[in-house]
Image (cartoon, rainbow, N blue to C red):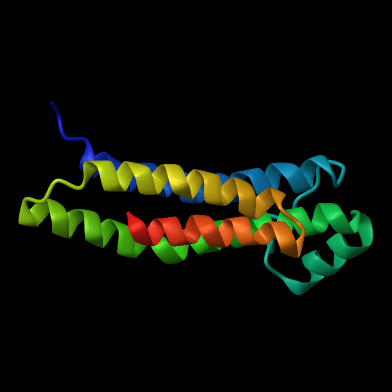
Length: 132
């Protein structure tokens, strides 16, 4: 059976990129097709969004960007772990693909859950990451 473990690294990168792509599309849809690509992290853009889109739309946009940043924080460790395991001859294919599946669920919950009570679901998935 082929070992697709190394393909998990670009798959993780795509999983990390997906919330960012979603955030841009979502804010453009709710802001008359406008997005400030020249300074999308600037204060002026964020202030403009606060005055032009509903609070729940802005909150979802911010959560999507936060999910993207969280993935970027985890991507180097994930890639290093996959490469180290491959170099050591340890088969971690089940673990890496389970991790990516959990990351997809984590991103979905991160973006869609807006209440404190339900946000603990995300913490539960994070705990499952540690088990993989």
